Image (tube, rainbow, N blue to C red; front, side, top):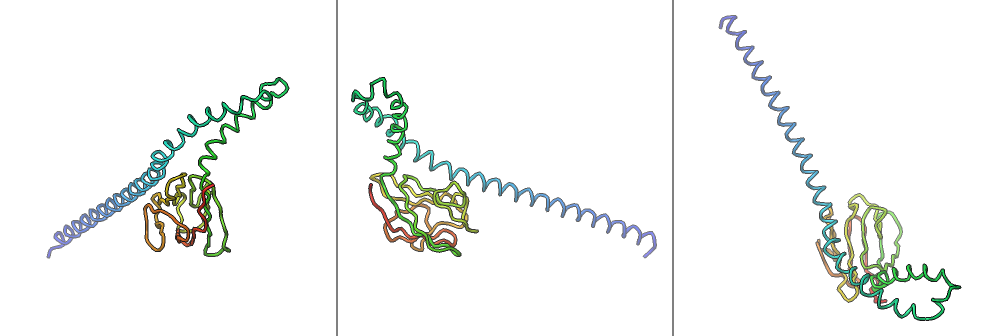
Length: 209
């Protein structure tokens, strides 16, 4: 082979290597962009799964309590002469919290007891009287579980008066289990065992109030 031919071959080899390197860089950039898009899509789905149950279940249950019940109940409270006397103006502002308490009492008609055992903490007993109990890592959750496999908002317990008590997974990454079975939605009864991350939760009390 002549020197000129060797030099030309060497240049072509270098050009091919340069092209391959550029192609690898492009593939890595596309893969990184794809990962970011998947993360964004997962985040959007997580937000949607948290908001949809509230829109579907929260609004219908509150409207009757706030619009219908308070006027009927307040009509009987304002009839006594003591409320209408000029000497008791503070009683009028005080009626506002009382009216606002009516929906709260309607929502707290079910008392739920949960025994919680974490991986590195003692057993604790939690009692709730809310119609919706949020479970997750966030400090704003009613039942806070600080674990690696616990999502920020992991699950919700629905406890509407006269309805079955329901545990709903809101799109957690590690899943929610009831009596060893992974669930999206399941009815709860006394003695049921819930597993969220490394936390074991047992339903100890269900009572109407």
